[in-house]
Length: 570
Image 1 (cartoon, rainbow, N blue to C red):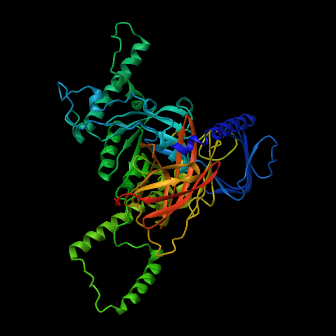
Image 2 (cartoon, rainbow, N blue to C red; image 1 turned 120 degrees about the vertical axis):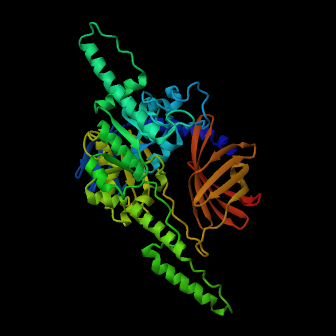
Image 3 (cartoon, helix red, strand yellow; image 1 turned 90 degrees about the horizontal axis):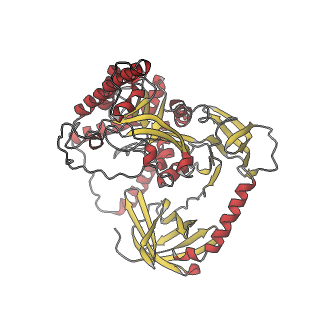
């Protein structure tokens, strides 16, 4: 954007200084913090020394080193960085053709057409600078277990760091598990659910036979045909030998039953993944000894269902509203729901209550679990965890599901999951205990890299407290930078999308992150790149009918921004 060019000399100088500082020390010392070193355990006002990304000392009474970067985090809360148990984080978006593929024999298509690619590694689909990786880190995650996108058998998963470094530096472990789905292929075999299950069985049995053949040939090849198997069959052999887990996506209770039956017949190590309907099948999961990842993609609260803690406030607000209506001659009569509608709403409320109680159900049954992020959004983590806690799940179980449980599941307990000497110094530092209301992440340490996040104070709306309708296109001007352009605000329910472009090239648009609206106030961040240099910008603006004014903050100072609506709201 135009005003960034004016600051380029300063950006270059700042980058040089930062690089010099990085070379001066690899040590980071965090002192006088509340350390939550593992689920259910804490160290009051302790210190942590990290060197080259590894925890060297942790506890009380640690001498402050003279050659370390001292992190000012007094009285803040430190946790082991969360571990994403399964997601598509960092995976390139794939355009899938849903039309019937042009193949000669639809009943026996090539594996690539049928979506049968167990030999492929997700590393080939990763982008280390993907926005989804930085978003995951901002939500408190230091490591992510990522699976490829696709159909029935998309391929092999991997564990990556969220540090945002080059691809060769962020991959910690490849071929962690096989990712599988009950997802058919349009127009070709397997085109049905039954076909997908049958094809998995077929591949599994072929891999078992291939394993025996290969073993015998290696032992005594005389008189035997040389093994020559399809690479998809070879890739399934570790699964048949229980050397590799199958992360099987099974959202509904019916899908879980199908996958459990498949596992019982074949005997592979199963991780039920992205499960969204645990409550009817807790006993079945427990008796199967399968591991489970529940989705943190929670449904919206049904209409008419109140928060118990807000009932009193809502009733008082209702009384005030009724007082204001006393002067009216007539009031609109409330329309009563018919019996069928009432029953439908009751069923929705019951289903919602079961859904948000799933964590407590598994906890009560003694079934350890982690969370998956195939469909959930990391930005909703704290809100959704708080909902599960309000519905019976303990905070200790929540922390376990985000740290020690996924570490054990993925075989990395020796380096991650807890904060202790010798383990990765991947840490999250928050303003409060992480699941308290209004807790914010202030710092993230990942792979020896320090990331600091601005804590924005919410502004109270002086009027009714309702969200102002601010959607639309606005022209803006930043006089100090001699810059102007277009600001576009789009709303879809509670989701807000902010786009900013420069007058010189309106097609060169930057999408904002960390977008937050409070009444008539809108705040967001921009990462502006110019000439290979990137500058982070924070914007806070206050709307008044068709206009707004506010502040743009860069690392070099602040400037005023003002604007006027250009077009009708969306």
